[in-house]
Image (cartoon, rainbow, N blue to C red; front, side, top):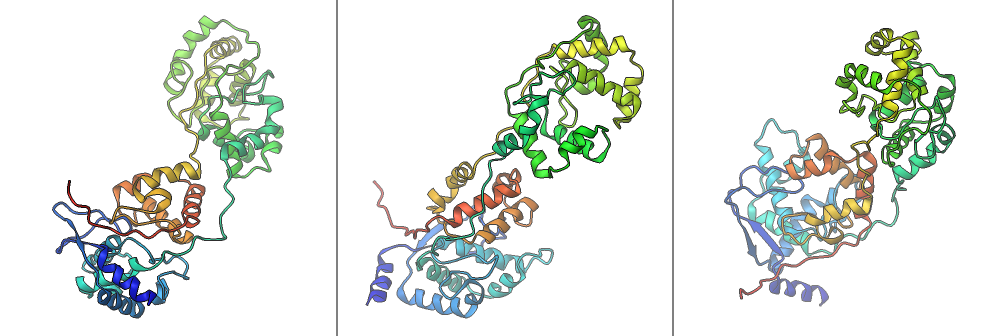
Length: 409
């Protein structure tokens, strides 16, 4: 009786929103875009439609997507409770790819749906939409580490020389504030590989992996800028005149526009002079800087060091990475609160398989799935961001949505 009541209720609600016939090839395989002129229209699904959709789904889809639309296969999405128009449009998109010999999308999906009629696709979509969504994931959530906090922790051993926030008080130690992470990471790696010869720095950095270096560089880049709290000798005005030759790479005010080139504004004068000496004697490996340093005498080096030490550094042009919750708020704009989409052609993400969500986001980054909005969203995601977003939605509760007619006012 419960099943009969549930079926009867389908008469009262619009549980499937189809697309106009004759859709041409769609842009995406995961968040389909409508073509100009296409219209969504509401269709009623009868109990017979649901039953026929169930039969088709069990014969053609259950092996991969599960008998009840809850997948137990890695990388294969749950379909139970998914938005029906989205399911229909996706199957239409796979059908269109059958006729595209240059496309190498999911061959199994293309093979499954290539000859199904619109009526069959609609009924299969209605069946899956009528099911209760998959339960939220109970395990498998990765530990999410705040990279800025991780950088602060890893940089604790650097504080004795470089200051707690990268503003040095020790002559001869670099001021690290305001440097772009790309430059700082490259500098650290140069010490570990010997391109910069400094046994102390090499030993300090030996235990750090790439992730640690990236976190440290990010931490320093986000701190409040400040000049080195160390003395500087030399003629500032003479240094300013000489610095004109350096501005092409290091900027007019010692702030470089190239993330791979260091900023010199506010740098410790002793460290600055030592770096130029290193280029001269080949303890630092850089042909362009070696030629520049070779032309400078001791007085010129002191003057340049004094000039740059007196300039105000600026914060690097980087932003604090978004947390998983902050990323989710961006995604929820289209995919609904907590991933429960209320747009008929936009997929629900709540309780979706984590490995599937990870794979889809990587496909948008690589271009394997084509959708300009999703590509732009995924472009800036790190590997940790992708894992965190996928984990967030896989642990949300999926909620079924029905579409009802609302009379015009």
